[in-house]
Image (tube, rainbow, N blue to C red):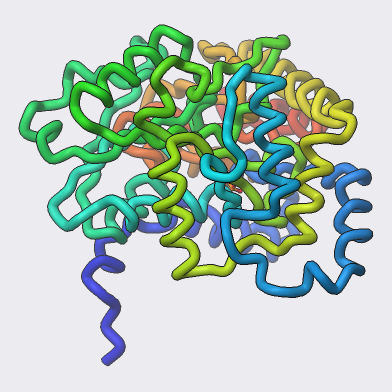
Length: 385
Ligand SMILES: Cc1ncc(COP(=O)(O)O)c(C=O)c1O
């Protein structure tokens, strides 16, 4: 009775479920757990944005179904943001669709383009929703390893011809979760050429676009010539403005891809609460001092963690963006994470959970303050001696 569908049975286990069980047990025992686990900002949403939603929510016109591709003022703010920061022109009417968080768009997108038997090209280690969306749509993910020796970029030349013949979507995500790597112009130009040659759609996940270090802004995929012919970029306000709970993002780029996603969404959800879209306008058009401050805080935390890990004799690859540090621990990532959790009460995510090429690594999310990071290093020193 109530047997779940075959597609549900194909879903990979939820990465954090086991870790979370252990975390709860330790907390119930009164232990202080330091968590570098889930990538969820610990800082509050900036006051100017909270105030914008407070004000917006009082207007009854926002209480109704939002419908469509999103509010015109928010889509205009998105187009202006792309123009200002990435010199990309977007038509707000046809080339932008507001999402209920970028995860929603990523998960739904394959339903609009994948038929049973189709293949998608998925980076691993990677954000699990690329493969999950593919599986739920009846497709088959083909995994492209991201290796440190290739700067965590996939090698398109290694994808077999028979896979390419069935492939329909290529997923890329830079700045990258979990490796913290960025993609440069040359790689992105190559990706656009590759997609054109093999008739692939490119879904570019830019959820971490604003989280970069040392003032080195990542390249927007849409700024690459020809990008709009083959792809869409998926963006999020979650990490930039500490708004993971608000659920707001957008898809933009190729008109046909945006329009198909919007049609699909019209049949599944009814859009993003308009008061939150109004807050989205404030996010993009208001004073960006808080974003500058956010980068400063994560960079400081990153540097404290790097210094501590170096002291513990780890070989650290310095992340250039995101709020993750992908550490090579030189062996069994599950055993390493388990040791830290049971003996030092520190949570890190074992790399294997992001795909087989993640083995040998663990991911630290920089979502705790620097004093706790220092404390974590002291505890690690005691158990790793
Ligand atoms: C690579 C990547 N893309 C997308 C998301 C989803 O973000 P949201 O749905 O909050 O916009 C995440 C969240 O952790 C992520 O790591």
